[in-house]
Image 1 (cartoon, one colour):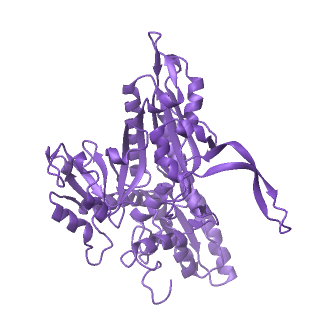
Image 2 (tube, helix red, strand yellow; image 1 turned 60 degrees about the vertical axis):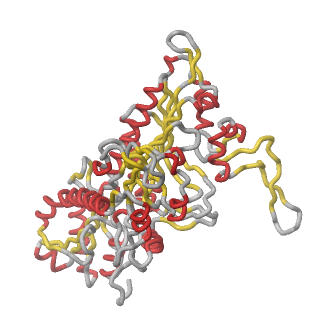
Image 3 (cartoon, rainbow, N blue to C red; image 1 turned 45 degrees about the horizontal axis):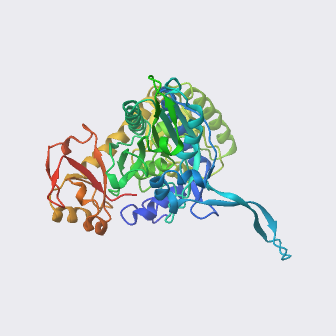
Length: 512
């Protein structure tokens, strides 16, 4: 941060939101662009956040009866061709392996060329329905073998044309659940159960309020009967699809020949589901909570919930302060937040105090504790909270810190959720005319990066390809599940684009 700047991140959200996002990623040391186009290197701080997300969600997935497994990265091309709509939906995003070795070109320059052409090309998995379906077809013989409830944590590849770190990259990490069931009812219940898990996880771990709902036909997962999703609003008013849960019906079971003998001895096709969230949740976290000084982390996914910054002018001071910091760290680590011991670190690097201070502000550490020789003599600490202005600090005794550390972390966790929910409510509006719709998504309020938000409109499927949506780059995000957006539940109406009958309002937004 320069002396002239009022903030650690430049440009600010108001000045250039897309560039602000990239600068937050850079300043927090979350990720770098990789030498492979569209891919990223997730740095230790970014990966530690992902590991906390992964561990928390993994427990929730297992608590609902699922188990983890691992399936191949490479998928025979013929597998994708079995489900026509599926292959059509992913064909343009697939990376294809056609050879199995490299050989010297003989040019004397060490140039290598592909050799050993494969009999059948392999696709690097964009998703795993087909390769997992192959295994399920072997494992399932009888209704007694059902349900199969399997999840895998994996990396996938979709050849992204307009990459952006965490939000859209060619390679990304995710979990993908794939289940098979005896009846349609069980499969639909599974799909909605996992949707609820995602809503709970994003709310309670990421402090991210989401709208759960069903996708319109044009937004469904390729090959699915129905797709449900969770949609979050970012600070620029755009929607982020943060997770999806798909009811696949019997489409993939028929493509992969997943059959079983039912209770009457008749051969039936299984009913299947798939569902997943990805590392784009980190992007959603950044754009929901962060400010013009950098990353802001909810404590549940902060690799370090408290950082202690020892301050000393000479070696003698530094040693005395550092010993006190070690004792403080040990005491704090015995405290608990959300059922786990506090994650506490000491930054003992020989850097100027201001440099250390801004380093941890930009990385989003929830609580910063500064201790110098004078604080040590008085039995005090100087504390800053990341959910408050960066320069705001309070002084308290060690005893006060011991009793209030976990309380403050809880306040930060719940406060970030409340703040994000209030922002969403502020930028959600019922709209009933084309003119108001156009104005809502075309204007930006002075002093704000927000353009639009969530528009709640009556809609009919006849309006799927309406030119106004393409002109404004707006899409239907979801048909909200009952109780998600009470303001949208005002009964039947008329589609604002076509005038045709509409059963309920749905959410429209610009999106990532």
